[in-house]
Length: 213
Image 1 (spheres, rainbow, N blue to C red):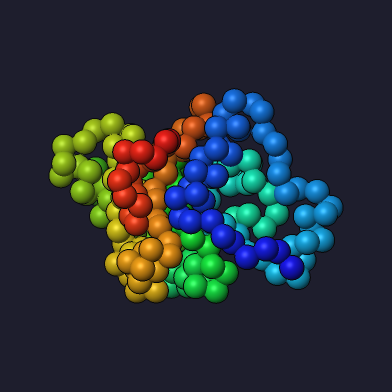
Image 2: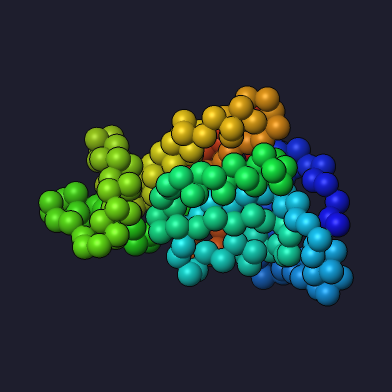
């Protein structure tokens, strides 16, 4: 049996960002990746964070945040778009597993956002279920365009913010946990070239200024 998570939402975020810093510096500790941890987590899991990220193969959560077995409850879809199964998974991580932190993780050069920008600009559409992904990213792209943005980073940040807002809007379970101070939701943007994760938005942790990113 693992120990019940005793971290506050702020402490969980600081632990996550510290792991990313180790990864960026090339000095990862690879915590909780040994046989002892495997045995300890076999009966139950109590991750300190739920990570909802893009499915991009370059966004392996346990690697870029230098964590191990039982640390992160990971949910990933292309463009971090969400449906009922995603919402249920995130709610499970918070309400059943007790995770104090939910992270929405986007990244630069996101194929889903790029495809959506192209579809909006050209009036084109994709085939199959890729069309569904594009349709779910479209509100973020339209909002970024309406704000006059042209840079990739701004579109990515807008999509991250939109996902965080939508998550709290659609999940009363998560919204109640945030309102009660039991959990926080943050949006991070990952840079593929240097491996850094940067804070985009925070819900449930105030003030934001003293959170390192």
